[in-house]
Image (cartoon, rainbow, N blue to C red; front, side, top):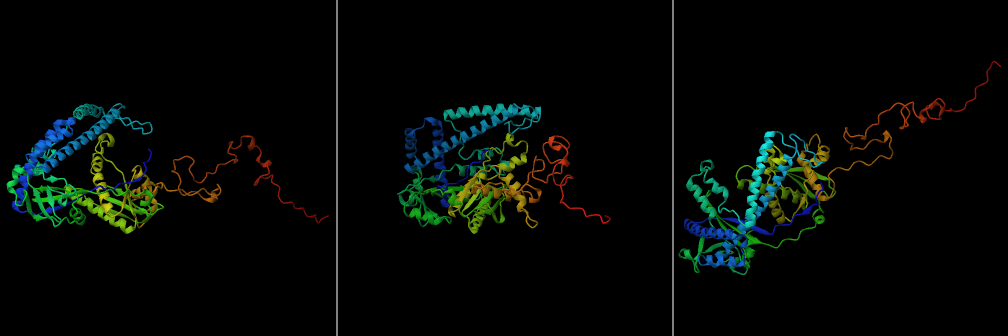
Length: 540
């Protein structure tokens, strides 16, 4: 297929930082009560927004907001209604993605069902392989009907604007029926369910004091919350506010956050409780002006570091502007087993080392494959190899790219996305063996990183062959990159064929193959030698 052009990935348009709140028991009780109360209002508003479906407009939004204002406050009502609308829009995007996946699965299964049993794939003719047995064919035909029924239901929901959302998460809701397998009791599950359904989030507003009137954090780290009207009796400060004993300092990007709140620029806050660890956290987020995208040639002026993503490590190699590998290959390992927090920390640690290596090399860009494994768990695409499907499905492609773009922007390093087509195959074919030495073994992943970097630089992945010799005889030698032995007319030593070197007639046949001794040719008896007069006989 045609290889897509490389491009520089735009930088992030938002920032989010988190800090732990070391709250007292009294502060935890107040936050829990406020969060549970606002969570109940958010659940009702989300249900109302879902019932409106496609008929929602600005007037109905105003009606919902007025209804919530009397039970909380105007700012809390605005935050709740906006969160409900965002949740509905997210569910709609999920519906669209799921319908696209269903259609792709249906097309794949129908194409394979139409092929004979055991038929092999023909990529040139565009034919997929057939199913191996009659039993598998029958099972897939039943699955095809199931997928079509799901697609019909999803299309009906899409047309009606109906979404299905579980506040607190569908996975946690299903865990209620499998507490023993999850290692939880009912009380522990109830605490997690309550924590996930709490609502303690407020959008910022520029021009207001410290950028947020609902959840306010001063430049000194003092945190206060505007209480809803029914809970105003819990206030310990004027104007119905509750000031926490805990302070906020934001170790990461704290100076950037402090610069915003000092000039009263908008900052959104979210307070979250983790019952499993017994901790409270606050997350601050804000938007910033998108940095201009660096031109591709300017980003690659000082070379690039090609990166090949794998399930357990990143293989990286520095390339100069001409596409030549410089130095030694680098490996940055990570472990994707364990909890989500552990996997996220492993990815961040590997990317940090990659960025430090890039700065040490002097390069200003990182080339990475633009991978998409959204359909990696499909048996229709990757067959029965469950191990391989699990391998590619756990690739952290989306999270890794998002993390890399965000972290590279802080280091002024550009990220170049390249087409992943044939990078591993051509890299192993053209770069793995030439770069391997008795003291250094080059892996397939190292060679793929060179292929990724060369594609970002605009150079071909395949190595250039030696120019043709100045003449065609065997004494001039042969080109270094020869074809495989099974290729016809490959470059090799020409075999000795007996008979006349005419190339147009077999030996002893044809007009040019008559009496070779009658021609004045080198090595034949009819050739005239140098003239020499015989000496006179002495007997005369």
